[in-house]
Length: 352
Image (cartoon, rainbow, N blue to C red; front, side, top):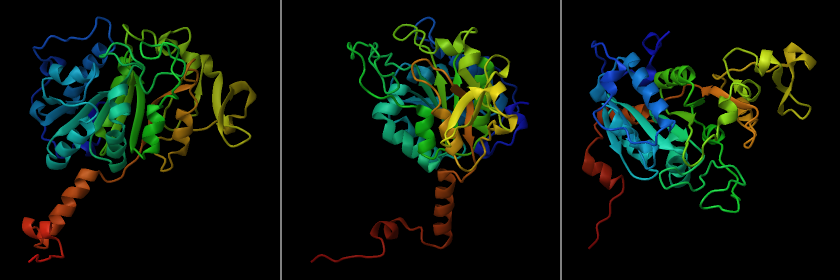
């Protein structure tokens, strides 16, 4: 099944094309200038390979980025785009989504750009449910400025700016997004092309803000940050792949399961030691984000044990930009759309 086979409420107003497209159509003539071996290359290839499935006109797709290595992304996409300012990409993209319902608007950002100076813009875009697709590249380091610790760096991390180890408690991007009441939250990995593409398909089909955390490797300043999840010898025992309607089991041969503990919290147990009926069944469409949040908190930030990936939440609620357009249309229909009267409001004063 491809994105074109799915209902696409998030793209309902974006013009489509009958022209057959390929990944080559979305590549520019710009030299891709990331460090050799950077995980950004894999993400770029996945996005360029996926976009033709949407069947959208290239001129109706926009990529907005902030500042950082990931934010060079718009240069390499043969669509419209904007390399904006540090942390403000969600704000700029919000303006586009509000005024141009004929555009598919994507935000590309990094863990430093989105979660440090851009943190306030990010959480309010999520809260409002603006029709944006936000790709958050998380390499747990500041790459462009040469290796300082970021908001997702683990406690104790030795970097150029924390030579004795970071004292900060790190952000969990998925937990943060769920706490901000995001309607779509997912996590995937740069090197898993199949999984990344599946997540992008669901994000594109969603109406509202879709946040996708992409665990991405910076082989220069933080090489191997996600290696336990990539190594075939260790990944099965550490990574929980979420699937709707399926029991949450993982490990080699499904040896581990997620169940409710004695205090009501979810815990990881040996599958052989629990009743199958006790194993939690996952549902990304649940109205209550409590289980999704609890699953996002299982991961150990150092060993990466019990790291869940997939779509954590995918629920429907009206997109902010659609509500704004409906509100404006309602006011205009009542004959109250005169700009001067709106500026004056209902009360006026004469100053003599």
